[in-house]
Image 1 (cartoon, rainbow, N blue to C red):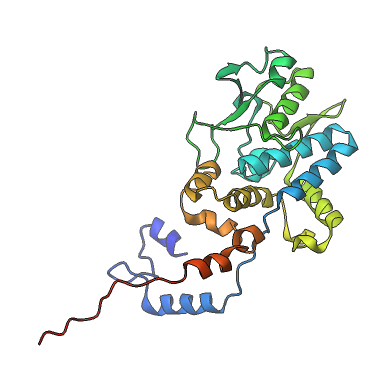
Image 2: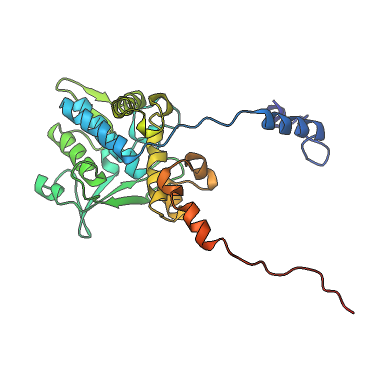
Length: 285
């Protein structure tokens, strides 16, 4: 309400004459913040959930299931937001399209629409080009190389998607989450992604440390970031890949990840003996 009044040229009732938040209001907000319960966050999914969800989907052997599997893989490895890899009604939904995908073989870029299947299969590096995606610079590319796994690999997933589109002569503006079931085009949605992940978590049981309801399509972005953090990748590099412009990234990460803290006690035992630079006042005679 205060912002609305300010936009109308009126005085913002929240602020004092000096532009600071009124003391009474700031004290009230501070108290509410202390009384609030800890924020609920979706849990990040580890790679074995991604593997299980992908395998279950691929066993269905339908165009929809294959598209879901590939979107799960791409979201995890590229740290994508749901609206970038699944059809969302959100106003911020800006999907990557076929024409935004770049295939590279040893520094040579392939044309997705004219290269052969054999050339596509030899791809060593894939990149996504930003157009209107959030926090992306238009025309900038972010890319990944092969993971070493024939299924859980961003390169192989995009190759599978492009082959599907080429068989159907889809235009370059087709979103990468589209699929054709033999009679019409359909889209992978965040709800389908969430359902697939929850089926995998249910199948894997309680050893994961979280329940199916604790995860959603958004868990793939934080799961990929957690995987990089556990691999001791520099947080600045994680922010660059995930396009976080501040420490907002830390809201997505969980200290509960076992590999992250497993050696902390041992490291503290080894390195806990330290001295401080003296700052005691000097006493002159």
